[in-house]
Length: 550
RNA sequence: GCGCUCGUAGCUCAGUGGAUAGAGUGACGGUUUCCGAGGCCGGAGGUCGCAGGUUCAAAUCCUGCCGGGCGCACCA
Image 1 (tube, protein in one colour):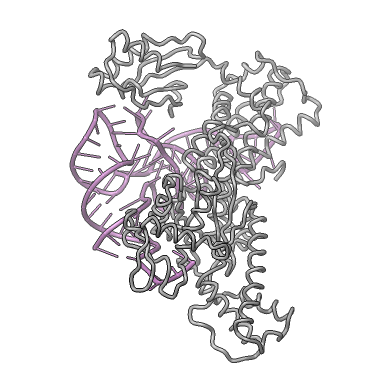
Image 2 (tube, rainbow, N blue to C red; image 1 turned 180 degrees about the horizontal axis):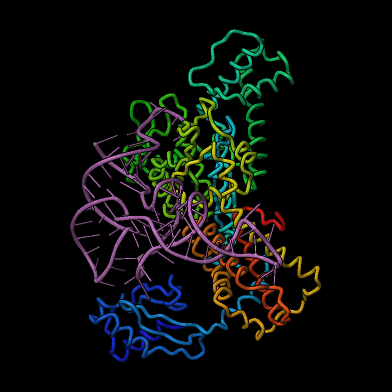
């Protein structure tokens, strides 16, 4: 391969170039085709240290560069000092046998080297149904997990069940009120209770099952039963809905279990031992300002009950104890204030806070009749993931969310949901896949398909501009996977697969696959097979179906 | 007020400090004897919120300002 490091070292040894440290340069495919196949900014980065004009430095580098045994066919110095390289087109054709050999593994890289990582996402409160924000988290988290798997990590998907604390108390009170009301009692609905319709349905289910059995018992007993029943049902629904959305978890982790096992208590004791806890006004506080937080936080209330934060510290400590690194969380942006203190708490235990990656995703804004709909579980006004799937389908919904950078606030217009789904770029990609399948079908039906692979010479006949562009895109996949995984940005793959589909459509419209010339036809059919494989591989990471017909 | 975040084409959004800032969509024009026209090709459309700074080079990094979103509980 091209060794620029060697060329620069050579120039340095000969004292043609003076510099201390080789800067971090890039060797990349330029955006403009006329700038060649590869370009580097190395010469421009050396100007400061070498004290020479970038184009002069480029001359010196090129003088010392050996291109023997590489695919480099030509180079030039361009613009402010870029060095552009032109490759022999034959290297490109070599990607086809590689794709066909690796099949579903093509694109896999070993960035992770088998390291254990965990992605925790959705973790919706089990007090209601899944809404649009959860849908976004589900699409993002699941594709990120798949992406990391493709990049050589051992990935675990986890759902944290918030089955403890105040909200559960509140949930219990709401359930009890509904139960009594449905039994004809005139009781008020609790302040700040859960108004959702689904909760009434749940209680109707309870009544169908046990009738008035819990009407004349102690309130505590009644609430305990109702909560257990409802949580069970809600979690079942959540699990089922996510499964339909293409998301399956390895672990469902209960918050309550951290209290039951004493993990929350021992974690607080450990923090106290390390000097991060103090008492004030009857409560226990964490010195989170020591980690850059705005103010200290209560971990155990004056009534002796630990806060959610305390349980969350125990939870994240537990993740590291299980050997995951990095630990990845996907949170709604409304939790951003929590990031610094959680990282800080982990560093208090001696874990590297940089090993905890928290991806914040901006909220999904729902638009109806041109107005913003406030979504809230308490008010019971929200669009559920199930309704979203019914309306636009799993594939369009997933792609809609995955395409976007988590930092962008997405607007989802309900009134346009259907037409948006028709315009969803996912269909552009799926259409390309179906079209590829159609070509292969036709080749089979007319008997011109062959199992015999094309020869190297035949593959080199794929030398049109459109074929070269498509081949380059295909060759890019491993690099794209590595980059997206390193940056934890699955949305790059959505862009990639759109580009790939576009390159294919362009090729398809300019060259015919099923031509008379047998050698050329063999080569193009192999290109078709490779393109189809790459599309399918990426769509699999995104959790989107690759249809043979549509 | 403090903190996080966003501001790029009419709209929805991409954009590793690099060369002439890109897609989709909408509007306009063209394209089908031929493998799927849900496609392809083309032109139009931009003070990258504003002003400074760093740099050979800034949409990208830094500072300030303007505008939007979200946080700032002994809630989760």
